[in-house]
Image (tube, rainbow, N blue to C red; front, side, top):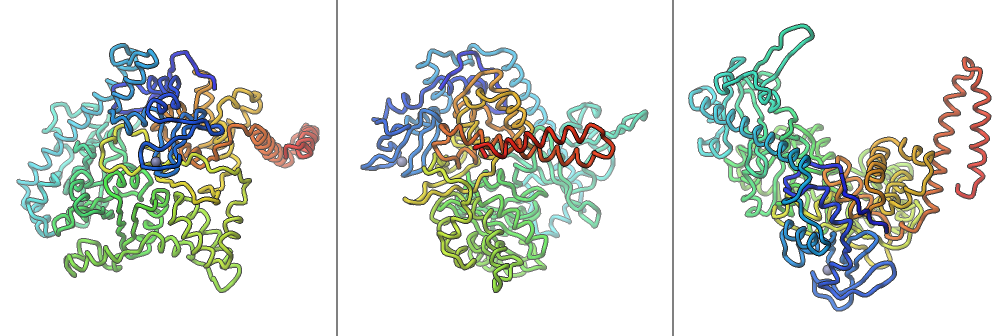
Length: 635
Ligand SMILES: [Zn+2]
């Protein structure tokens, strides 16, 4: 595969790394993972890949494979995988920086700590400073809220009324934002400072022609500082004490705060998670604080949003066991359904996910107070396992006494089952679904796998079980694809039947050379696909324009923290390993896309025929093209 030698000027994500992303990408591009692994493991060529005895687990026959095309290694025995950097970290025990330096040295590159692209370094530096400044502003506000709590008898009385001790209030840094529009003006020297708005503490209301009005976002509320896993204050939740609305008010999305990623209480709970062996995910910050008070310090909460895959992935860095707790009403069921979707891709055989439904009139706090901690602990241990909940969700609304109902069940079960990582759990659920549908396991599997099958089991990018946050800032496995295990012999399943658009992405990312061989008309067909596929190919096109053809490993580095990184990872992890050679499939996908596009245009023109005199001639033209495409061997 061609390797670019020009300097890589890549899309640059926000990371904590001192080494620019573009350098990492270039390094991966130049590195040969076969050579790097070969320094430690004796490898023998076997087909397109190299095989050897896995250095991560004891074995007598080789299940450790290294792919030169993908620049990835993968063990089918223990699931470890990664690129050259990951291998050095995991096997040679190097830190990320050490691994980068080691590789750079062997390929004669200079790590840009000493010799950087100054503009890029400055940008990264500025961004870090900006975020640090926002954290300081938020910290300072938090401090003032805490001071106000001490001097507000009614706020103290409220917390006491909820059964909270001063100790727990202190542990969570609770405070009080007094009533009034501009209390923060006495905390910060300059109330007009843009940082106050950027941090979400102050609202700026500037209507056309009018003078800007500024006021505090949080007024007369109990304040819950939201901390990231490093313990820095990144935002606030504010709760009214009386009947005001909204009951809960959160900081807006800011450069340091993203609701879809952060979990309230994770910083405070991280020690307790290890001790308790599981995390309890609740729906509000009051639950978290109250549960800590009542002897369950291992609780966290989402921040007014459904649980996302980002949340779940984050939680699994701290523990292997997640219990989601929901109110027993309809809203709770809906939230549980969303959490299920977020959790399924991570539900590997070594992890445990449960769903706890409280009696309708209770939240966790009130339940513990009424029934005691033992009763709550029992509720946790009796919570619905994921396997049962997934079955309940699939059966929802299906009358399984009728064929139609069973067919509906199969249709509802398919995407759920498809989201699961490969493993024993997945196989067992296939069995259960088949029973419920009234089909044989193989029959159901064949129905679900109706898409063209490609033989070999691919590199199923597994994420090893890493406890703790040691590599949170940079993990070579920080992929949302999660923990996939190789399939038992003889089974060739994909976790989801990929769509035509998915396949186009799989093929083009795995073998970028194919992008180069397409015509510009074909490029535009692909680029016009709806988001995220079209958007990702636009990114790929940009990479191609700037850097030429790159290996899959380099592309994945470049996509780190891209908003659709997870999608690409999933697709790549699901792809069979022989797609690189399959140029014919891409051509037939393109033909199908063109047929779609032509049919759409013909429809549009037909509707305009009455008013557009040229429409008829154009339709004829398009129809001719359509007919020739449909008759081609590609379709
Ligand atoms: Zn292994």
